[in-house]
Length: 104
Image (cartoon, rainbow, N blue to C red; front, side):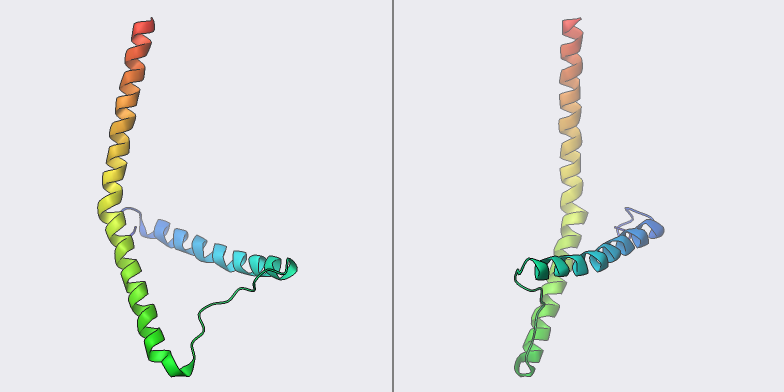
């Protein structure tokens, strides 16, 4: 959001720090809960030495594609959706005002 000019640098930094802090606190708690409840243990991607280049390329392109999708959605689609919500809210508010004038 900072790169798009939607928030200040400090706000962007605090949001990112909050998300990182939340993940650092939540992961050990959920891991402890999964061990106590005998659920499937947490894990991440594990790669063998045989396919390390393929795994790297797969992760790289998946992350790159995800970044572009987030950018496109936040830059182009969210303003349209928020504008549509404002129009709907305005229309509903206008109808409410009209009905309240009729009832008086």
